[in-house]
Each structure stands twice: as C-alpha cells, then as structure tokens.
Length: 84
Image 1 (cartoon, rainbow, N blue to C red):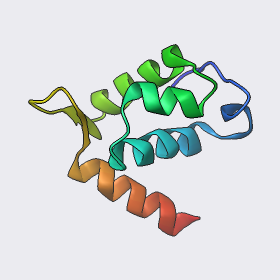
Image 2 (image 1 turned 90 degrees about the horizontal axis):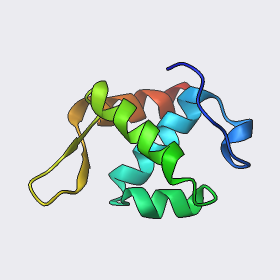
Image 3 (image 1 turned 90 degrees about the vertical axis):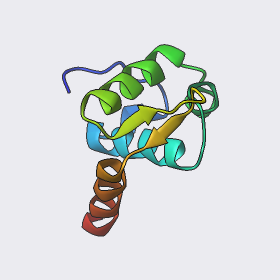
C-alpha cells in the first residue's frame, strides 16, 4: 500500500488493520464522512483508503452513490477476523 498518513487512531494500527477497519465501517453502511468522524475528521486519509479498497475490488460505488463491500471484501474481512 505504500506509506499512508496516520492520525492518532491509526498510528497504532498496521496497514492491514486500518484497511480492515475502514472496510468494516463500509460493510456497516457508513459513508466516507462518517468513517472520517471516527478517525479525527481525516477525510483525506479515508478517501485514500477508499480509493485503495476500490482498486483492489473490495468496495464499489452502487447506483445510489453509496459505498458497498464486494464479495472479495467480505471474504477478506472473514479471513482477517479468523486470523486474529
């Protein structure tokens, strides 16, 4: 993923933990603004993660302009949770 900017919440997390956190928020129906609120309002950080999730096909934008987790994203979350 390269070097991601970190805030006070994500500083202690690995990139895979942060990716899983953002993905989980999206799976719960949260939008970018709602996720950013949980991460000190860092909208740039969330946009970067969402773009990365789209590039690896874990998230898509549906016809209502909402973020939706794909089956690949669901599989990743299940594997991430089972590895913990």
